[in-house]
Every structure is written in C-alpha cells, then in structure tokens.
Length: 88
Image 1 (tube, rainbow, N blue to C red):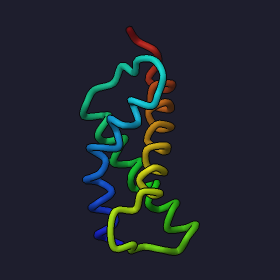
Image 2 (image 1 turned 90 degrees about the vertical axis):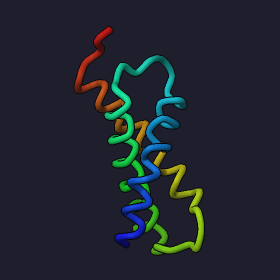
Image 3 (image 1 turned 90 degrees about the horizontal axis):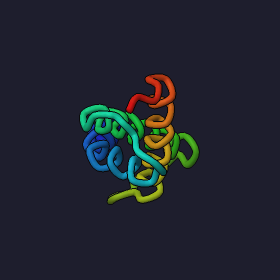
C-alpha cells in the first residue's frame, strides 16, 4: 500500500495538469497547487479503486485508477476554486 501511495503522489504531477485540461474555462491557481491537488486526487482515486475492487497491485499501470484520480483531482480543483473565489 505504501508503494501505491508513493506512485499516486508521483502521478499527481501528471494528474493535476490533466485535470485542469478537462475542466472548461480558466482556473487561476498556481502550478504548485495544481500538482498538490493532483497528488491528492491520485491518492484518493487509488483509495477509491482499492476500496471498490479490493485490488491493490495490478502489476502495471492501472488506467482505471488513473482516470478516477483525474476526475477526483478535477473535483478538488473546482472545490478549491469555489473556496478561494473567482479572482481575475
């Protein structure tokens, strides 16, 4: 499980920017916050996948967990934007 968390955090550097790409409009947040929210989305996405399926090691890249991480990261970016407020 520790390995899964470390990989999910590393994937956050990819998941965060991908989540911003799928969102419409402009999100006025920094690159660091994007990576942090992407990492958090990756960890939560992996946890959701593991909880639902019970599979913690697929022997390769788990694309379903990756996609769940992108969706979770996009939701976190939207929540962060709503809490922070729309600043131009």
